[in-house]
Image 1 (spheres, one colour):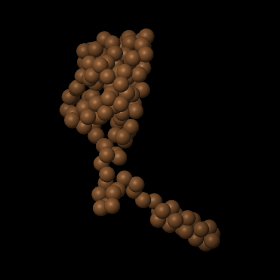
Image 2 (spheres, rainbow, N blue to C red; image 1 turned 90 degrees about the vertical axis):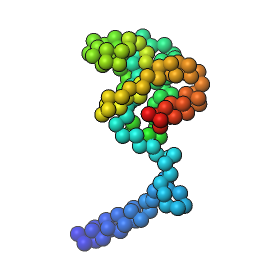
Image 3 (tube, rainbow, N blue to C red; image 1 turned 90 degrees about the horizontal axis):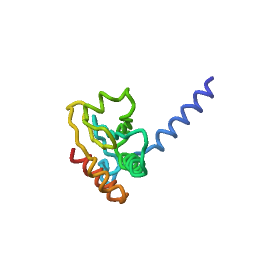
Image 4 (spheres, rainbow, N blue to C red; image 1 turned 180 degrees about the horizontal axis):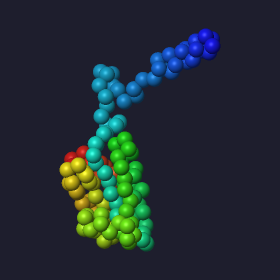
Length: 136
């Protein structure tokens, strides 16, 4: 019993002593560009039942763009599903659309035009979406 406890204690001490925050620079301050927490924000993409390649690309690039935001919710909503009629009406959408949404303040930013205009340029799309999230 004592030997097991000793080994466990040594193991835990080793684990905790080897852990360090990789998101810190030399001054000890957190490097914000590595992790961007945006509480309360969600990304919502609406789509119809039959999805085109552009819609699928927008979904993939949006998911990639929000990775640095530490688990920001991404909701994919089929507007043709009768269970989604209320939210589709609330956002005034009947097809492919992209929104940044703050449910606490009930603020919406429609990025549908941005998404379609930049869907063919992955780098521009990702940087532009991240800028919109940061400014929202």
